[in-house]
Image 1 (cartoon, rainbow, N blue to C red):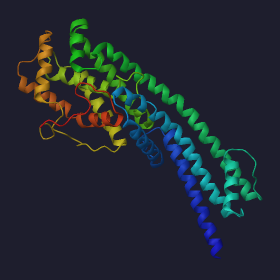
Image 2 (image 1 turned 60 degrees about the vertical axis):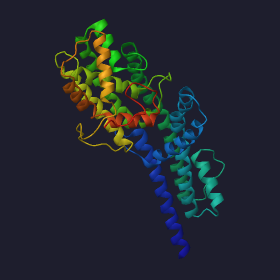
Image 3 (image 1 turned 90 degrees about the vertical axis):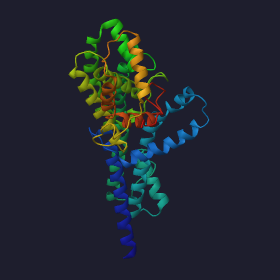
Image 4 (image 1 turned 60 degrees about the horizontal axis):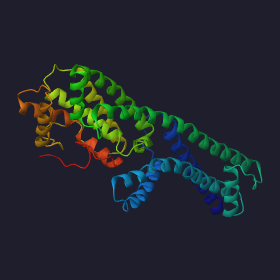
Length: 352
């Protein structure tokens, strides 16, 4: 009686482990929405710790970037063997519970079924059903990974196209001030509206792809001095500066761009469980850009002939009021992704 009860409990535990593993794969590869799966999360955390140890020997940012460029690919590839191992352990328990003589024999039958090797076979109909189901799950997991990679790299390519184009308009590293100066010299400030509209769409796509395909957050740009995070900061700061201090008619496209940007950053931050105030207000919630940095940016713009508003105190208050919406989450994602140094993005402290 005790042996029967033990086998029933072991079978249920094995079935639960297999179910959790399949559910993890579905949440990671199939579910078209944000789902913070604990198995996937632990795999990436463990691999990140290994890469953090490797980074201790790096002396330059370029060396750290070369190391971290492999982090996301290794994390994605590690998911499949992790899931296969968990499925194999779950079915090992179920094979033992259904009468396989020893744990070693159960492990051999499970491994042979999962990898479709066929060197170990079951003894009766119930175990044959387990073999076929395990082989099916193994093939499905491999197929899901194969289908996942093209979608991920397609989203990556679209993201990086905009990041690369921004270098033409905002310099390298991207700077909000440089972007405004170049538009003033080349296109005219009235053409900035096209930029805000394009990046509003970009933010919407990044929010969807970087929560449903969360590994994309860690895929680094082809060049060490580029990053989707620093590009985001430059565009949002550019829109905030235009709305607050540049003496042009207020453009609702800039406001919508900022809103789309900070909503995207917040939703990605929610996925990684970063805390932030839901409705921040300046000066109750400080920002990391100082008044001195803001004044220096204004002086640089004025030196290039960009028309600025006279009330600089009000302009600073308006800028801080926009920046406070995305300041914390922007810097948190910059630290998470080890983004390259960039004006007003990176290792900063809160002003005030």
